Image 1 (tube, rainbow, N blue to C red):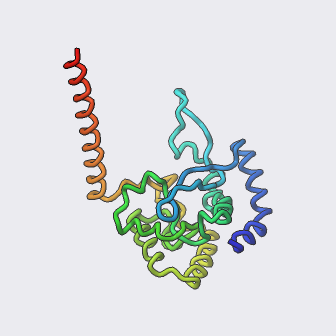
Image 2: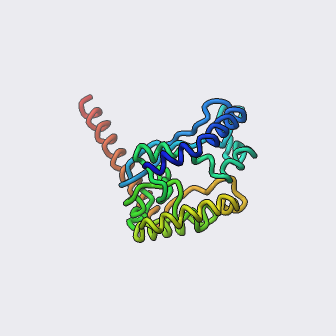
Image 3: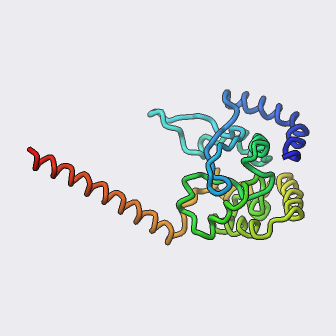
Length: 222
């Protein structure tokens, strides 16, 4: 936590500059907030600098990511400066400097038991997967690297990850999957996805049966 405070103080000039640039390009608010899953799968609110516009279609719906991600937004992601506000998440005890990246809460039921092990530690601003491909590798590979980190976590490993992160950010490597503006969504492995769909179907079937019973009881009373 003290490292996060020191980093926040040292990065303050860059933080102020990014706030100005984001406000100039996108207007207010300058921060993007989203619910993510953290330690033990508990939900917390992650903070980032905005990298997308709020452009909408004629019906008032937000345009797809590839249309809203501006050139400035791409540069901000490439520099990883959009992640700077997460130092506040670290100070609040919700994240670590190093650890598996926090993912969307909707992914939780899609994880296999092995993949859920990534939640045995606090999520991080950077991690083992980020220095070994970042967004240019598959979800399965990312989770495999996350689990390796959980099983081999140490102070020395964290230091190595931090130094390699700085080097990769300077080189701007592994920003996103080739040909995509953002990382594709995780849909789970086939076996796990079948179980989730089957469970949802059973719940829907039970709800239908309950409704049928209620209607039948009403008809009988009449």
